[in-house]
Amino acid sequence: NAGVTQTPKFQVLKTGQSMTLQCAQDMNHEYMSWYRQDPGMGLRLIHYSVGAGITDQGEVPNGYNVSRSTTEDFPLRLLSAAPSQTSVYFCASKGGKDTQYFGPGTRLTVL
Amino acid sequence: AQTVTQSQPEMSVQEAETVTLSCTYDTSESDYYLFWYKQPPSRQMILVIRQEAYKQQNATENRFSVNFQKAAKSFSLKISDSQLGDAAMYFCAYISSNYQLIWGAGTKLIIKP
Image (tube, rainbow over all chains, first blue to last red; front, side, top):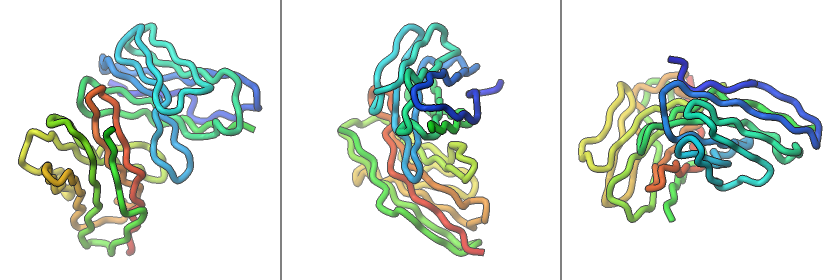
C-alpha cells in the first residue's frame, strides 16, 4: 500500500513549456485533489475530483487542466508554464468526509 | 462561507515544555471533521490529529491533544513535552459539506533547545 504517489519530485521548466504532474493512489479513494503551496503560505486548491470522470475547479484553476479517467490516477497539466506557477504542488486523496492523505509534493520552478 | 483562522503566525516553546496552538473556524454545519496537519521542512503534509464534531470527547494522540469547543468554534492543539522534531508549520483544517478542506494560514512552531 503506497498511499499517494507523485512524480516527479522536482522539475524545472522554461516559460511556455507544458508538462504533466502525475498523481496516483492505491486506497480506492473517490476524492482526489491538487493543491499548490507558495512560500510562507498555506495550501490553495487548484482542481478536485469526486470520482472517475468528474472534475471541478478549486480556488486557483487558471493555467491548469485535470482529468480523471480512473479512480487511481489524477494528473495535473500545466498548459503553458509561467513563472507565477513556481510552487510546490501536492496531490491528495480521501474517502468521503474524512482524513485527507497527501503525496510527497512536486517542487516546480518555472524560469 | 466556512473559514478557518489561525491567529498566531509564529510560536516558540522551550524543549520539554507545553505549547498550545489556536484555531477558530466559522460554519453553520453541525457535522464535520477538523484536523491538525504538520509540515516539517521536508514539506511533507503529515496528519497530527483529527476530531469528529459529533464526538464530545477531545481527541488525543500521544503527546498531542486538542481542546474542541464546538459552541465557541474553537479547536486548539496542545503539544506536551515538546521535542526538537516538533518544529514545523502547523495547519488547522476543516472539511466542508462538499468534502473540500478549508485551511488556516498556519502557525510556525519553533522549539528552543
